[in-house]
Image (cartoon, rainbow, N blue to C red; front, side, top):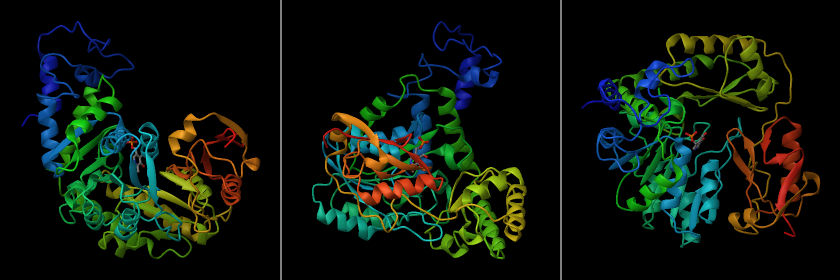
Length: 471
Ligand SMILES: Cc1ncc(COP(=O)(O)O)c(C=O)c1O
């Protein structure tokens, strides 16, 4: 079957003059490379339509569905963010109820706001060393569903940003017992669909919808993602409607062609995954000699399917250096830029595109760094929902808090007020408080401590926080 890229190249070679958008008319400029200009088409005869596909885009999406084990797959040109918005919106009624993992991405909270949902949260356990949230468990989901029988859909994140995997089969069983759909935000797990050994990807493990950012862990450009759906629990008409609402009416053909190309590349090169897993595991084993730095996952966790391969957490607490400073040393002394750093740890990411030389470079840097970590910085590790923090008290629905009259007050004076914005630790942006929740003394103190220790806290501008007026 011809790839979307080849179809677009064929089209551009036809002798058809473009009296239509885009304005570059397929000419190259210094700011538009020729290869992009040539395939940057729009919806004209023969190029199909993303929002109502019946030709070359439909063919490409069908090919994707086959590879991803889905009934249908939809290309997303606004990243997984648009997929999460569409999935949550289509699986709930306006004003309805959703059970969602508290470590959900901002896009899920945006859907809650837009659809005026009444969310119930599952707070995942927080792991130690480093303190990151685990993926939610089936028991946690089952308990919350038993307590809230009017829930319409469940949303979990797996793998998490930090590489923890949920037992999706068990979660799906718990969710399906209630006859409702399970949405898995698998933005960080597109590679799992090509892992023939573990077959632990969300769709093949029982999810009704999975959203994958192909750009995060596979060779594809930023913003490319795919939403896949399986089974009969999702209203596909509603899903298509929301995909159209949340995505551009001028979808990028280069992005769609590269999404299709990425899926074809992975389908043709399945041996990349076992080779990558092997390289990652060897890295973990060789790092075991380190004295001061501690690394997660442990090699054994990869086999228990609790941890993803590709996310290396470098715990710097035991070495007496902050993660932020460690990342600076890795950048400035060893020429390595990491995915994220916070006072307690550094997150380094690997994909099938890291070659042996890349793995060696990081390994050698970490082995040397471990011998002489240049002690500095506060190495305390905090999280959006630290163990000692109380569960936030919900006073109003998130949408009511955002849409009510708001005012900003100094954070130091905000205890007892109702939060009107998402206050989160970034990256990855997991909320400490969401709109409609009370800012308790403990939350205020936690946020102040995090800011002092150098965490990047979003939702606080110059020490001020947005709260519900008179709330
Ligand atoms: C868990 C999770 N879901 C969804 C997204 C959104 O993905 P995208 O950047 O493809 O829109 C992110 C982005 O970081 C994420 O971490």
